Image (cartoon, rainbow, N blue to C red; front, side):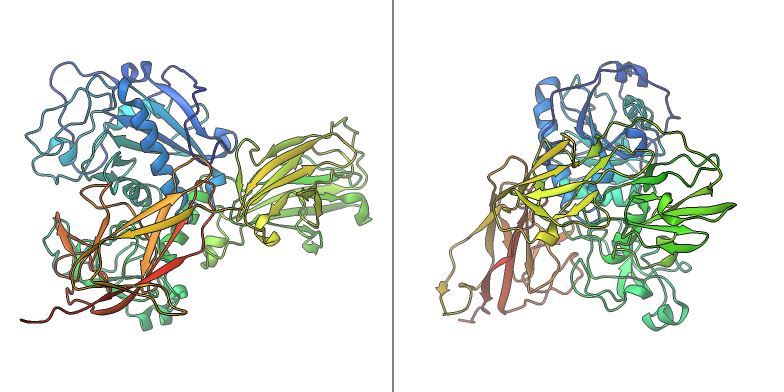
Length: 637
């Protein structure tokens, strides 16, 4: 894994085009071609450069995120790199991407555009641009489409993605960023987003939710500012929409019944909220707001479970193991190499003839200690993900989250000794700091008999790590703020790894517009009094490189990613009693949130608690700080 700051390294790989996929377009309807001679997929690939951004393992054993830009000229390529960095660091701040980031390789495909910008931006009358991927708003300049639908020529996008060796349609996700400040995106086979809009980095995870997780929109409108009307279809196939009541979900054990009553990761509790699938009534979703309804919030638990399965299905939990194609002797050790999610360790359970063997989750089993009887025996190792993000047994038992390897063992067979040099074979990258809340790993070679131990030190002090010694969960060490040195070594050898541990989160601060008055009370956060709208600017600072994500929440609602203001990323966020309508959506209502004009606009006068925090490029989350805002009702003259 390269720098957590997602700064594109200039070591690049220039390749020729591989096979091409059938042409097609993301979104609804075909895109209108650029007038004049249009470059084909092979021509586009000839000018492209592949840049590895984050490498967690071989491409053919990882989920590969391939990010490409359109409408960025050669001179504007630094803007593309900055957009990639921001989009990725926002993505890593959102679960489950934060916990499964180590499953993902990221590649940037840089292809200079003859002209700057993309087609029909912002309107149908805007000039067409000569760009490599023919990206365009209005569904590719279709007057029957909607302005925010941003499409890409999928044949050309596939040709660029094919430049990344080891990737295919089965193990990758393409994200195409348009060089534009206009709001827009699409989700389908590929995900698209504008690169520079204030909300653009939040469009990307939303569209990946569509493309990768097959999640549906929870909007209660299709055309902005126009209520969608009643839903009249059957029970939706979507896992996060239903016609059932909560009682019916529990009785039938259907949809999100396992999560009902849980505090939602997106705010409030998991329940039944009307609206979704572009309808205002007659269909229900799990939470009041989530990223599939309102950009800025998290995936709720129902959506998060879907995304965990979708990400994990792109990889194999068992990365390598003792060959299982022929019977093996009982005079040797058997091993499995498993993946290493940042959010927690995988479980490994060994069984002999169906009986569990206590190993504490170790990745190696020495058969010599089992004193096997004559004849054949069946040995299995089951690798599973115990993540609390999944509650559905069918999902937990699927190939995405559970894998089993089986061997036939016979003590009459003799294993030939192999000369295996003690060495580390894979590990958490040492080139950049690791977060204090992550799992660090170190895999080794595998001798024929016995196993290599991995030992750990923190700041020179040995850390006890029994059982699975390949993973060390730093959260269990309760690190003090600051910088620490973590070391892993193989006893009796000179093999050693060293990491810098960043245990100091970024700091955040706020700046508000001038209040009517400021109130200081002992033992309470500072209070600011307003009788109308006010602005809030959040600023984050870190002592290490990389984009920092700021978040805030009001009255304990869901954490919301700070992005400035929808019309200007450099402008502060604006709170008002009823919210501000921009392009058919409502932003910044203080108190009870409001997403669309037909939501309740009743002002929430009184005192509100505003909390704020940061998530740095390494993944450290700062402790929340808070202040109070009192909104007083204007008095009649």
